[in-house]
Image (cartoon, rainbow, N blue to C red; front, side):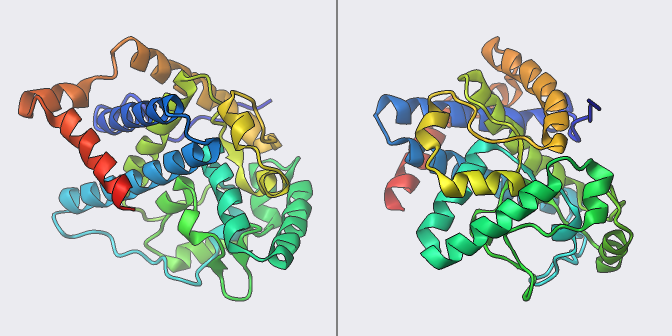
Length: 299
C-alpha cells in the first residue's frame, strides 16, 4: 500500500482556529441531538449542512480579507466540468450519506434507477485504479450531467468539491486532456485551505465520538447509499461505506492526522480560538450557540 500525504497542514497556526471551532461546534451539536433522541438521518443532515455552510462562509471571508478586495478571478462557471472527469472526490461519511438522502428525496424512481446503474458501473471501473490511472481513464462522476456539464447534486456537494477551484480554464482543459492527476492550477489558497480546515474540524469531532468519517471515494460509495438507508448504523459506530484503492491509501494519512487532532481536542490543546474568544468576549461561545439554535428554528 502506498501512503499518500494529506494535503493540509493541520499544525498550521493560521488553520488551527478553524479546525478547532468546527470541531467544538460539531461535537456539541451531535451531543445535543443524540441526547434529545433526534433521528439519525436528521443528525447526519445537520452535521453535513453545518460544516459545508461554515466552510464556505469562512473561506470566502478570509479570502476577501487577505486579498484586500483583489481576489483571484475564478474561471469556474456553470457547465465547466473538466475536473469532474479526472479528479477523485474524497468526501466524509456524513456528507456522502446526506447526498444519498437528498437524491432519494429530490429524484424520481426512474432517475434514481438510472443513477444507481451509472454509479455502479463507475464504481467497478475505478475500484482498483491508482491516482494516475483514475485521471487518465476520464471516468465522469456519476452525478455529472454530461450533456450540460452540471452537477445534479450541486446543492449538497461535499467540501472537496466546494473548495476545488481554478483561475484558468485553459489550465483545467490541459490537465483534463493530458490526464494529469495533480495539475498545477492557479488557486486562491484561503478558499481551499480554510474550507478544508472546517472539514477536518468536523471529522475530528466525529472521530472523537467513535464515528467513522472516512474519507471515501464519492463515486464508489454512491451505489451503496442509494441502495440502503445507512444513517442509523453509521451513527451507531459502524463502517458502512466501501473503500477504493485510492481512498484506502489516503485513509492511512487521514488516520494519522485525525488521531493527532482527536488527542489535541480531548486533552485541551486545540484551544487557540476559544482563548481568543474568551479574551474578547467571555460570553462569545454561549452567544454563538444560542444564535445557531435560533437560526435552526427559523429554517
